[in-house]
Image 1 (cartoon, rainbow, N blue to C red):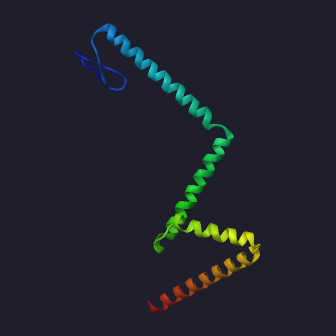
Image 2 (image 1 turned 90 degrees about the horizontal axis):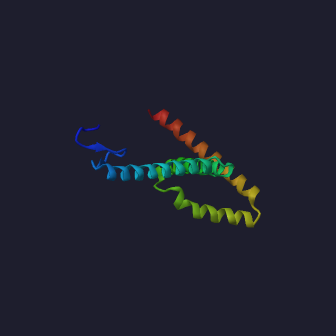
Image 3 (image 1 turned 30 degrees about the vertical axis):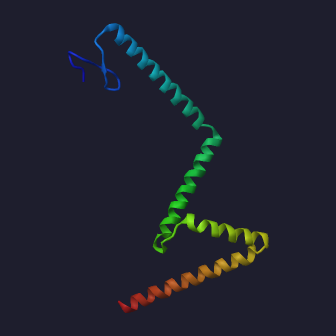
Length: 129
């Protein structure tokens, strides 16, 4: 990388040929490097705290679940952010009225009905083919 007539710094920029100016440039580069090392060290020390690791894991899990839910909802033309306000309203209604067991039973019944309809549709597709 070094050319005989010009010198190159760490970041690939040209240094001056004057020794005094070059010394100042090198000292400035050293300060930036030390600041970068201090920042990286602080970032690592912050990242290894248990509460930060837990929060990161929760954020990652939430992101993965939301991405999966959005992929499942894509054929319907909607996504989680559109449905979430309605789901939270329904959740609050069920919670306030203490209808948890009834809501769970209805969810199981709707899930079983959906499974049955999907199975029936698959059998009809096989018969038609």
